Length: 402
Image (tube, rainbow, N blue to C red; front, side, top):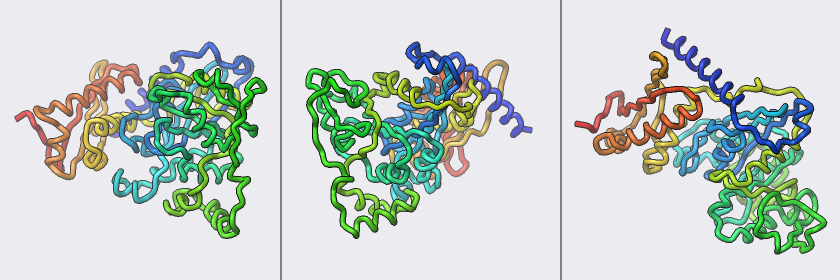
């Protein structure tokens, strides 16, 4: 009976999410083609950990469907989100960061296949790929696991998204970064820029009005040894998660970019800068085909999973990594009391001292976490609700108020 009630409440909230999608703000700049016929596109979002993929996904679909925190590996399985407006359905699949099995076991403390297979599974159903790169990262290269994925799926069109530009002091420096990450080419043509346009960042492509060409030899133009070619062919046949971390790192050791990006976008997922242009580009790439989902659907993610991930994100933001990654979160109660949805979630700790750290002095820390989760859930579900978080260790409830 309890299980049936949980299912009924989740179905009711899924309906609320669909209504929320219908009432979401709509961009007045959406392509006119969308107004004439139903069109569809599914996009995969991939990139290294902590590059801002989840926040970018939320911005594109205008809903907080993916949990976001300042720590890496917040997303541990693919999240499918959708935005339908003006006859266009845009489906975005947010994927975990490209990591290896050792990182998953030692840092994230998870051995779940979805954490490792997610990025490739996102590509399997996509017609376009968004490769997200942190503009503030010290490395001027595309991550070797991302490169392996791109080389395995060269038939998919792709765009480079330079994220976190709000944190870049001299944006003109990003042009050199683009040159490197794109191997000097965008849309099959050499990148051309004018100095007078460097302060104005948007979609970077080719134009007859831009006159200063920056040359760079692409990896295709470089001669590779027979040994490298043999290794390449062997590794490209294997799914990325089945390749050793050092194998892909060695294979792409002197390859820094991808020559097949059709466009480059400079965005801030935090402020929303550049998102409209990116969304419009995705609509332009869409095809005349049937919708995959109901037009009022926002996400396929179950409401209880959304709640658990929201709690996990807040724990990551408020606790040391070694503790936060080791915690297990589970929603145990989910029922309506009048007009209020009452939710109870448990945080399981292996050690009692961890539980007391999670609670904080006088339970102050868990109260802060709970408040943030409540706000996040109410904003998404548009439903009056209350989330109560209990902290346990080996089945025993821990309380710091005494």
